[in-house]
Structure formats: structure tokens, C-alpha cells
Length: 64
Image (cartoon, rainbow, N blue to C red):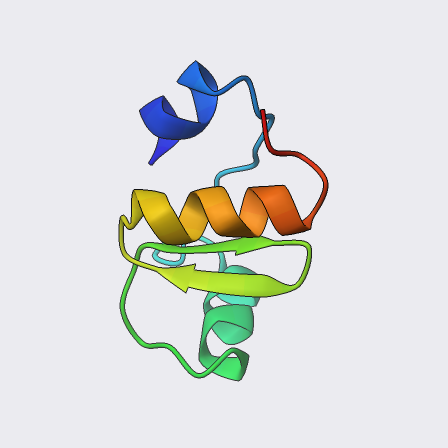
């Protein structure tokens, strides 16, 4: 995930749900219990799905 976003030139923040209780609570609030989950402008993408990630980035105006 990090490599995909980095190669595409997108900034991101890593949230470790094992170390950060707030991040864990936010993951649960989104309806997920497993990682990775990437949120882009309010849209959650579960797992590593380049097509969905690209679509979310494009919809957020960050597509390259």
C-alpha cells in the first residue's frame, strides 16, 4: 500500500491499530475489523485493490 501510494506521488499517514487505540476505534467505526483499510476523502478501500484505490484517488481529485 505504502509503495503504491508513494510511487503514485501521494502523501499518506500510517495509522497502526495495534499501537493506537484511536486508530483502532476509527477502524471499527468504519465497519472493519481487519487491515489494511485506506481512507481517501471519506471513502474506505479494504485491502490492496489498485483499481479501487485509483478510483478513490481520482474521485478525490488526486488522480495522476
